[in-house]
Length: 127
Image (cartoon, rainbow, N blue to C red; front, side, top):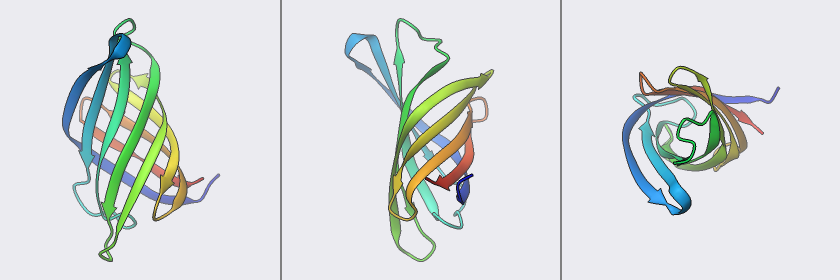
């Protein structure tokens, strides 16, 4: 098991939708922390998910994250992730992504989004 960097909880703030080529729906949802995290401070970012009009109730798909954290020491970190989401219950998604952030380096994130409560919880690990 990889070294844990931090646990997190983000709250949904807004979503935007656009149409892409070949019947794709782009959903970009904005998320933020309610309180500062020990490692990343106040976190803000966007999750991008692509859906297909020909399979609107798909069980899995691609996703990506871009965000920033305002650390407790007054500095800032930026992070990018990409990976997949999959259904894990009624209105629940499990996400597995890898990427990099400027504070921890290469990272892996395992998380869950509860769509009914609009809460995203998970853990960041060193990759």
